[in-house]
Each structure stands twice: as structure tokens, then as C-alpha cells.
Amino acid sequence: MKRRVSMLFAALLLLGTVVPPARAVTLGGRSSTQALWFSDESGKDHTDLSQYLRFNARQFDKGDTVQVTGYGRAWADVQEGDGIEGRLYYLYLDKREVAKRTDVRVGRQFFFVSAGSGIVDGARVDTRIAGPVAFTLVGGRNVLFDTTGETTGRGDIAAAFQASLTSIPDGALNLSYYLAYDENDLAKQLVGLSGNKRFGKAGEIYTQVRFDVLSEVFSELQFGARTAYFPKLTLNAEYFRSIPVFEATSIFSVFAVDR
Image 1 (tube, rainbow, N blue to C red):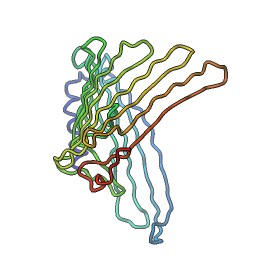
Image 2: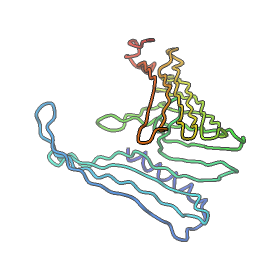
Image 3: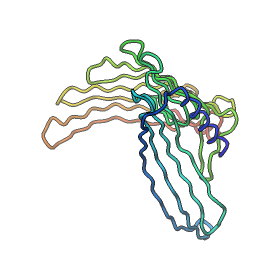
Image 4: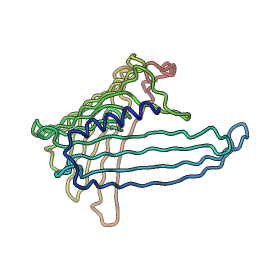
């Protein structure tokens, strides 16, 4: 864990060398402390002290095109005395306008597209060079957690691509593709579609569709409409259907269903 965090810091510092010397960097954030007293399944008492830290640094350059953001947690069981443990949720550097109408993000980051989501140690590129169509490409080492810490293994990779139509007045339409590998074996492969359209005061319609390529089923179907046309009253009608699917490399995939 410490080695991976050090590598992330080193990568961010290296990228930061392309930024002109700062005039006055603005640093903000929030820190919170949590104390938990509980008994586990065997009746053993625990006292956990946790420290959360979220920070943001910006204004590295005149155009404010660079930003560094991070969030993590450190904790220790006071009664057990096993030492301090930590978890880094995200730590990334944003650089706007790396090229014409193109932004880049590198580091540990959470991403979401209509086909799926995840946390990766990698890079993301957002570009709007194709007129009304915007493209997003993201990928890297798939970061996985369990109750004891990080469980990512060699060959765990996640990536996604999304095309977004931005020319719809008061609306959006996204088509995306997501895939993940578990120790170099294909574990997930999904196609997603999402969209929404607002009709002024009359309301809006929206949809979210996901198709699991490996299981050959629609894992999620959502269609809805809402309106706040009447004062102090919001009406919503929605159809939602979800089918449980599992990674192809999981033993639970034998329980996959198609209805």
C-alpha cells in the first residue's frame, strides 16, 4: 500500500514539473475524526480511532488550469495496538486544456460512465474536439477494497470509453463501453446508454440501459418521467428492472439469471 501511494505521489510531482512556478497556491480541505466502540462476532471489544482528510490545491498557474485533489483515511485499533492502517480513496491531478478542448486527469480516481464505474490508478482524457460529440477515455489498475484493505492483484485492469452528445437543448445522451480484467482474465464487459431531456416547466424524461455482453442479458433497464408542473407537487413515473450479474471469473457466475 505504502509503495503504491509513493508511486502516485511521484507521478503527480513529475507531472507538476510542467507547470510554471506558482504565484500563490490555494490549499483547502476538511479533516474529521471518528471514534468507534464495538464488539465483533466473537464478542471481542474494539476501539477504532479514524482520521479522514480531504484536500484540494489549485491556482498553480495563471490560468488556474491545474488542480490536485485527494481523500484518504488512517485508523488504528487502540485496544489491539496493531499500528496505524490507511486507505487512499483518490489522489489525482487535473490539467485542463492540455491540448485544444482536451483535459487530462492522472492518479487514483473514481470514474462513472453509463456502462459502469470503478476506481483506478491510471489516466483519464476528456476531449471535445469533435464538435457536438464529447469523448471520454479512462483506464488503469483496478483498485479493489475489502474489510481488511486493498485486494488488487496483478493483471486487475478496468477501462471505459464514452461518447456524449452535447448538442441536445436541455438534455444529454451518452453511449459507453466498460470492461474489467481479473488477473488478466476478462471479468466484465458491458455496454451502457443513458439520456435525459427536459421540456421546460412541463418536466423531463430519462433513461438508463445496461447490457452485459458476457451474460447476454440486459442487466439494468430504467425509463422514467417526472414533472413539477403543478405548484408544490412533483409527480414521477418510472419503470426499473435489474438482473443480478457476476464477474465471469467469480464462482457466483453460475447463479446468473436472465429474468
